[in-house]
Image 1 (cartoon, rainbow, N blue to C red):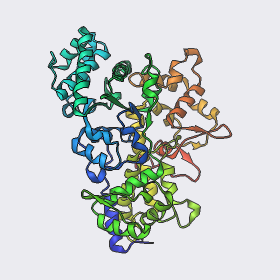
Image 2 (image 1 turned 90 degrees about the vertical axis):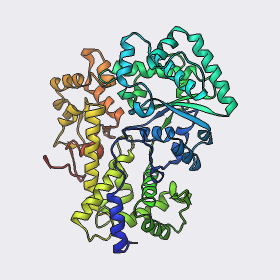
Image 3 (image 1 turned 135 degrees about the horizontal axis):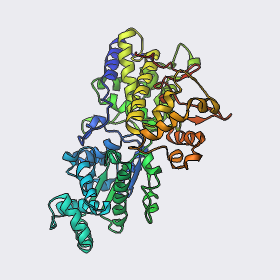
Image 4 (image 1 turned 30 degrees about the horizontal axis):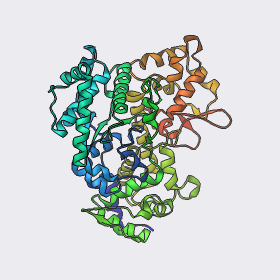
Length: 493
């Protein structure tokens, strides 16, 4: 099925206006039409899930903002989230918005560490202030620094406060949830301080386990979970028993896309088309539309809907690939992980390119434009990876520019000279370094260890015959070639 010209233009414009895919910078909650809960994320929102692990762009900050906002939290309950959230006070322990979250910022935390306060005392003080506020309890401290010193000097009083708060919350039938996000930015310039502060907060979370109405939740990146120093304290494994990966399957990503279109500027056009294609009614709730259950996690129902928007093939026939699987396959890292931001950015760019280059194309999205949109998403993902998350990756993959994958390990050894390896260690001093390579004795830092570190990040993988391949989401942005693959952008373009 192809949409009529008027519907095609309206839908193309809706794609051009997909939500801004930049990182969440404050605690402003997503709007009703932007809030989509994949079935696999429901457990992540449970009060008893302490550790939630998600790659960049997986939605950690979005869920933090959604949980923090009272009205949004109630909407979450109405759309499948645990019902206990409706009886929960949510406060923020750390985020990228200290003003909105009313929590100490990184400079305050740095000063408290310099004054000799232990991280666990700092976070005990933060928790005590939140409990005193919610439960109307007396606390001889009005500032975070005062509360940290109080927690250090009078641990008995802190435990008494936990007991009093628990009793007050039980009587009210309520819970307190303290949420932590953006912990990689908790101490800029010092991964040792990031590790210590995160570990201290996790220790406090473990100490709160006997108090059923007080819970803490941590949205962390995979590298923080992999860092052995973060969980280096007694019984830390108890916090990981119910950990959840904030993963997005292809059906979840397309579910998010359809939900966004159903509640966007072309809602009426999209819903009319979607109900005709799927043969299902799309229910409304409090002024916005929900996906039918048969569409949420069902590739069979989703495929014809996407094909109406972007055509069935990534060319004139199936030999170039099927659109439904091609898009997500080219946005995934080596572990199959895909960030929703990457999908929305790729399709938003594809719509803009289609509108400019192929306005008469019978579908809202044209296949060559989709390829260019994927290349744009790759550029963005590479910038995030190389400048903000793992700067040590940059000198390694820059040396592979214009080479063609798969590569032999001997090819990597020729490119990754001693000068390059020294740069890897130098640029990673303020971030988490390549774990295996950096921790090995100086004379044992073999390139195989570096390959293992990159494989762990999902930047590359070993083929069955032992060669090295790089997924398109990184390959294209770094200008690395592959026969038959999406072409990297030209230099300077």
